[in-house]
Amino acid sequence: MVYLPALLELNLQLSDEQFFQLCQQHRDLKFERTANGELTIMSPTGGMTSNRNAELIYQLMAWNRSTKLGKVFDSSGGFKLPNGANRSPDASWVRRERWNALTAEEQAKFVPLCPDMVVELRSPSDDLSKLQAKMQEYRENGAELGWLIDPERQIVEIYRPHREPEILSSPKTLSGETILPDFELDLTGIL
Image 1 (cartoon, rainbow, N blue to C red):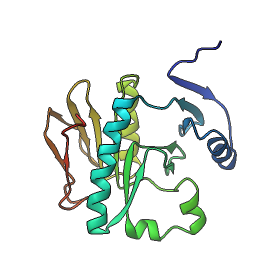
Image 2: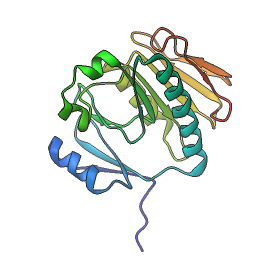
Image 3: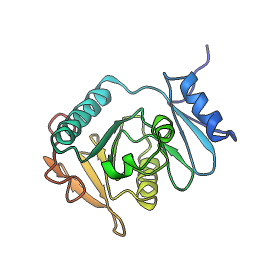
Image 4: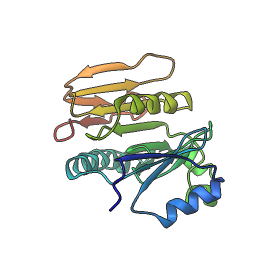
């Protein structure tokens, strides 16, 4: 029997199409790729993390259905960032006009842009410094708002362009600010 770490990192040089096909052929795994081409393979999350993520997606989707301002994506949605990295945030949102500007082929594969808003929900097996680096990468590639939610530490780090992350201890809610107008994430059951 072979045991692998919860997070496996490989240095494979794959074309965009090869990477897409790898992901399609192994849908039970979650893949990401850094701007340098390093491949990360993550196992499925545990029950608590999955439930927290479902609650997050549910609230974001409910808000978006009422406003119709954009598109919501879960953790299986892949994005090709401007720096070349392929990332799959736990939850993300893209403004409708940016989504509609994409071709049908671009919408069907890994979306070639950085979401306007991203959320990473820390699992017990996640390395905090790697998640923080990923949040910085989203911000540097155009994300206007990012939330790193860490249930273990009861902390939320908020990422915005040209600012240091804001750290909130045990917040009850998070505001979508001007990016997600009138959206307020209830952290009950998430944090």
